[in-house]
Every structure is written in C-alpha cells, then in structure tokens.
Length: 273
Ligand SMILES: [Zn+2]
Image (tube, rainbow, N blue to C red; front, side, top):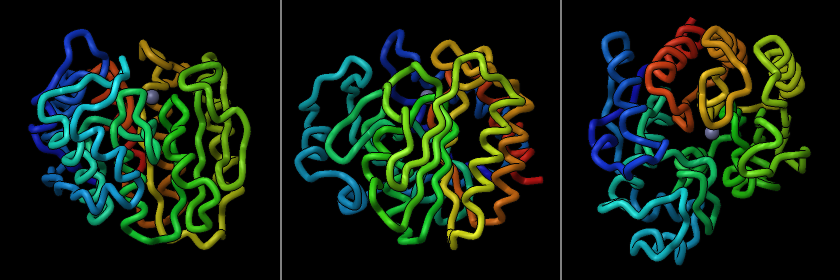
C-alpha cells in the first residue's frame, strides 16, 4: 500500500479540536518520503447516496446540524466529499487514504464523533464486492455497523475500547462481530483476539478487505488508548496481509501526529511485508 492524500485535507480547522490538520500534517511529513502519494478523487452526491439519506446529505451541505464533536467548517461539503473520494481512490488502487475528516461514526442519516460521511462505507458499496471490513480504530464504528447491518455482502469486525465512545458494539449482532476490550489490554492479548477473530473468518469467499485504520489505540493516545505499542500496528498489518485479499484502508483516528506517523508506517511495514 501507498498513500492517497492531498494537502487540501489540511486546509480546515477548529481551534482546540483534537481532529486537527496538525495530526495528519505531522504524520504525512514522516511518511511522504517513504511512500508514493496519489491524489484523491472527489466523491459525487451519487456516491454519497450509496449509503446516506438524501435529506441528511442536504443538511450537511447546508450546515443544518448541531453536534459539538462535528464543527461546521467553511466549505465542509467540499472537504468531506474529498475525503470520501480519498476512500474511493484507495479502493480503486489498493492504498491507504490519509484524508480527513474520518468516517466510521457517520451512519445513513447521522453524523458524530468527528465524522460527517462514511468514507469507507461509500467505497465498499461502490465496489459491489463481497467485503470483510476490519475496524481497528479504538472506537466502535457505529455508523459502519448500522449501514451494513444485515447486508449479506459484508462482514464488519471491530475491536474497540469499552467502556468508551460511542458506547455501541458491546455484543456481536448479525454480520457485525464486536470485541469490546479494556483500556489496559495491551499488545499480546489484543493480537490474540484479532488473530482468533480473523481465523474464524477464513474461507468465507471475501473478494476484498476494507480497513478502518485507526491508530488511537496507541498507548500515548489521549482519546482512546488500549495500551498498544507501535510494534502492535506492524503485527496488525501482518495479520491482515495474511488474509491474502485485495485490500484498501482509510484513516480514522489517531491524535498524536508524531505517533500517528510512526504507527501508520509500522502498519504499512507489516502489511506490505
Ligand atoms: Zn477512534
């Protein structure tokens, strides 16, 4: 995997907000010399409509919403569709999109947790492939689970900190396999749970692996640490690469820029072998 990114993702900010351009700017400065960079596509309203409700799209476009985690930025619709387009480009080319805002807390008709549109879900739907989604962000991807719940083309697997935001994902339901883990779990136990969960999904005929790549499980992350080291992300990359499926990834969380860059590099080192 290489990178999908454009500096336009760094053009908006809200003072004091943890989902800041600085986190990705610092991470990208660490990664840019080692990996190739492709520009994102721009998602269209038709792309958004693959997973989102028409009126919800209109509300986001018009800034007709209120959520303290999701500020109304100038030109938000441009940046959010560019981030969704990053996921589309990543899917087409087998790379990781570092575009922001993230997406896995956005559902069919709601936003939340720094997310406006569900970038990964849009790319999965557009591909029309039987897909295994693995969400290793330290928060549960409630939006992704809701969008695909009962969809026979998709299995959603998530490991996430509990108790923690958004509070969902305490149990597995239908095609959503949820593993809530304590904040103190650390590398060994986390990797055991992931290994076992992936073993249970072998030979199910998946055509694609889609990764909600969140790095806020790192031990220094201020939002949702589950005590992981940087090396754990390399191991996660290896385990996922062992599935031997065409794959793409989109960045979700990870809030310390320097650690984020190192952790993405570790993940790519493991995944790319
Ligand atoms: Zn997160």
